[in-house]
Length: 104
Image (cartoon, rainbow, N blue to C red):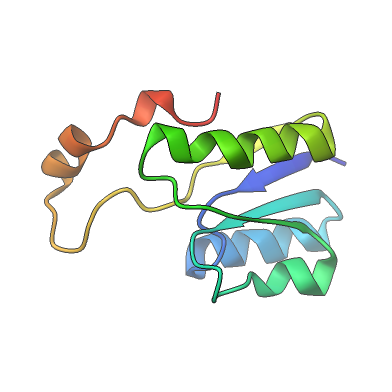
């Protein structure tokens, strides 16, 4: 059984993947940014749930530390959280986002 963190698990692609992996009995750690939108899969399958914005490197430190403290290891990160603002061209989003300093 792998320990898998899925970012952006409150929206369709992340949610669908979480459901499949939960049915395969993996230990899921699910991320969402909005505390008003809990991850339904977390409740249904008893998965860990982490609420945090991830748009700045400093915002990734707290949930990363929580995952390490609670679970000790992480086998797979599915980085599904959106990076672009609505209406932002993909090339502009890449310039705005430091994708290399996230979950380390």
